[in-house]
Image 1 (cartoon, rainbow, N blue to C red):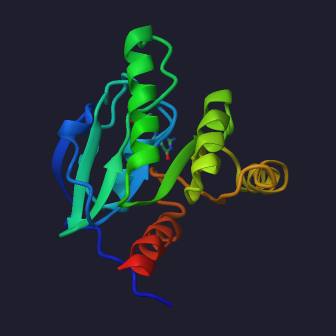
Image 2: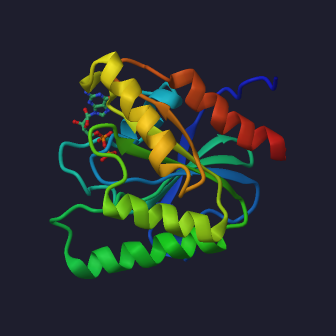
Length: 201
Ligand code: GDP
């Protein structure tokens, strides 16, 4: 088994929406993308063991940029803009969508995507749309069923099983339970990201 990558030194390097503001497309990247307010920033923060690397917010939809973090030289985590925030003006929403599709389809350094979904509401229509794109692009996906602490252990496991049985036939991905607040599933998430990065480096 490969040794886990140490994510603790991860630091912000750059952010932007337009491709000219993205980090040069060399090296290796794993990106996080998900519905607004699903716990994506909290997941990035616990994975990197940093309190406020990715900005969490009570105001969903605040992170409008692609945010690049460097784990170590040539290895990055990328926080993609959250989708599905109802109050986002339509023009901005269209632009984000274009940029995300643009990024996913063109990015050579992208090895895999972590998609957090709220365990109480996984596979919303926008999540399904995202899964369909990643399927077309043949991008590896790892799903975090976030806020698992909001359900009893039995209910959380039932959702996990349901996702495995009913969704992952259609959309190819791996999936796990996750809770940023309880640090549940943290090692499994780190391991998956490490595997992607190390199988390539
Ligand atoms: P993002 O918009 O997807 O980046 O979501 P955030 O990480 O900012 O989290 C959105 C809200 O969910 C915040 O109020 C967080 O405190 C809360 N949250 C995030 N992760 C968890 C979790 O594991 N458990 C619980 N109970 N709440 C969480």
